[in-house]
Amino acid sequence: MKILKKAKFVASIARSAAKSTISYCVKGPRCERWPLKFQVLRDVIYSISKIGNGASMTDDDIDSIDFEQLAASYKKHDLPDSEIPSHLGTYVSASIKVTEVPIDPELFVGTGPAEKGLIALIKSDQDIACSKRVIPYELIAPTPLPGSAELAAKCEPLTPNERIILYLHGGAYCLGSPTSHRGLTGRIAAQAGLRCFTIDYRLAPLHPYPAQLHDAYISFCFLLQQGFRAENIVLAGDSAGGNLVLALTLLLKHTGIPRVRGLVLLSPWTDIISQRPSIERNKRFDYLVNMPMASPMARARLFYAPGRRMSPELMAEMAHPLVSPVNADFSDFPPTLIQAGDKELLLDEISELFHNILAANPDRQDTYTYECYADMIHVFHQFESLPCSLEAIARAGNFIKSL
Image (cartoon, rainbow, N blue to C red; front, top):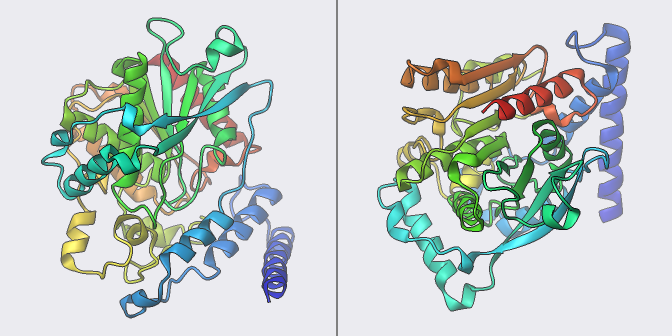
């Protein structure tokens, strides 16, 4: 049975690739800047995303969902691994022992829907039975290494004012890892000339909100504990990782940690309940599949409250700034670079984020940059051969250098 299912899956992908190729050869590219390989890859990813995604399910089906099995399926079909070309950099893998990064739960009082969960997670980490929990991470060093390989592997400042990138990967909070984003983070680190610290935060649906925010906060505090200064840390992330960067920045502000050096947001997911016009306008271009919020399989619901039935109260919680940061108060916000493609589903909410930041900082508008790339789709940076991808990453590196 498994062999038959796999054969059907492979055949479906082959049909999608063949159909896309024929369309390209007969009708030309769907967008002017799309080479054949890119269009075919986009169509294949889109086809895979639609298989068994549960878009037609309703809350009547909630009791039939096995979230452990769903998580196992996500892990089995996770984003593919990527590598850093040896001429760009190298990396080491290690982990943070959470018990060695003490967090005062009182800091999170007043954080809305995150408060109860964050405090419970902190207390869980302090429990003796949970004392072995770790947060895996990768530390990427660009080539040539800033010092010896041995020194570069240590997660501590190599110079008194060393800057570092804390990168939070994308994947709708259900997929992804430092491994899947290693090629992207390695190229950003090389362009910026800085080391990059990428964490393997917990994933939904087995670890719903605010587990990811909790891990991100611990990781930031770990860097402080190692000797890095907050003003020398650049936060960066793509898609859900961009959402997490924004939420972490807001949480840091709430807890009184000084402002970070800057933010780099690649196609950030700014509103998890968004239904803005670009979702309909760009659906024939982007590989993302719009999932109706009525489905309990919608990524937003799997991330925030798997198994919870839809209600006005749930929608209100998911609109909170620490969940959907587009709704935040952005006064005195750090310097920020936002990059997006004009053919992506999330375009309108990303544009709204930028305009909200500008409106809250009328005297500092030159510190915020929004770059929208023609014919590009969600996190086009991951398509390494695209000229626009290379250009965007180079500009991100230059932005980080300029901070």
